Length: 453
Ligand SMILES: [Fe+2]
Ligand SMILES: [Fe+2]
Image (tube, rainbow, N blue to C red; front, side, top):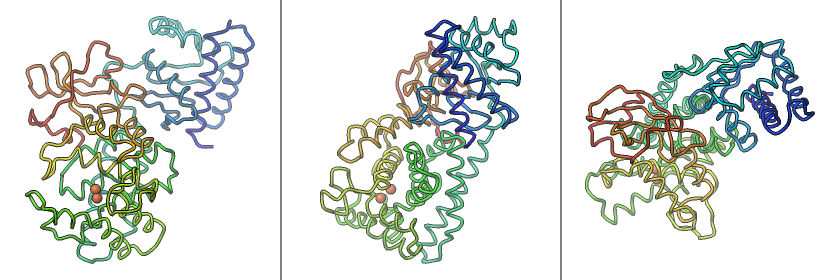
């Protein structure tokens, strides 16, 4: 059993106990049994691990340093425990050897109460075998999450690999399949550790060259969406490679066409659309026919197919794109819409792009995947700039699980539009501050991506 599975179990047991305490008398059998089960589990875990600790950071919950995922199974219990930890201002909660049924029941009955009372009871050391660390206003990142640098390194390495891959194909050179595979697994690991840390980096647009940046962003977004729908690591690796390679057919097109700064003519558009066909040929040339290659070919061919049977290359209406193509279709469109380009100097604001995509569900996009994608990115995706009702301008640095309209933000401009290294505010906790509207950061000479680099 994995660490996170143990974590999910203990969360479920605590949830049952807290719910029971809410409804029944503390002496009631239901409460007693629930506590007995939870204590038994804690004791078992203490035999396996050196500690039994829950940590809440931003909107994540970690069990023994392993992040617990919000999945369909156990969603309610994790959300409940997460919200309670947050409400009580608890940063970490550890259960120590010697804990018994009675102590856990008292703890549970306090856990459903108010912050003030909880803190008072904790201070009076009512619980001897439970230690709590409370959050402070400027909460430090837990040690095990100080991984921003590693995630950034992975991103830039992946960008380099993407670039090499495409350049080699462009020049008919052999492709380093091994290093691309390695980097995909590194991306998956970064995503498992801190989904939003990696997603934030997809706010980087046009850093080097549109094609490389876009290809990698589509790969990362596809991995994140794939992870949300529960794909295995093996499947994710295939999806990630295929996501990065979706536009590979463009290497077969004249460079002048790709980098043309004026509007394309109809003939040029028709030629550009050929990148779907060319993609198949390029992958065939480079990778042979392993499974990842086959899947990548399918996606290169289908990534401009719409959900309703339209799109190019022209195909039969009842020929539906495979799941991976439907995933890449969504991530590709989102990244393209939110990136400044020759034909679209002012890109869509991320929240607006999502709104457009929501309208196009069933038409361009798979409706269920669109819904999960929007849930993943939140109403105001990471990298969005927001005007707050106190006049300050903030940057979204993290989504808030369960509160899509109230992300975690960093203040970057004060009321007088002066750039500042401002506070980090959790808008789901900070009742006073409200979002007025999302804005273009460029208006203030700000590049949101710079904050994540
Ligand atoms: Fe494309
Ligand atoms: Fe694309």
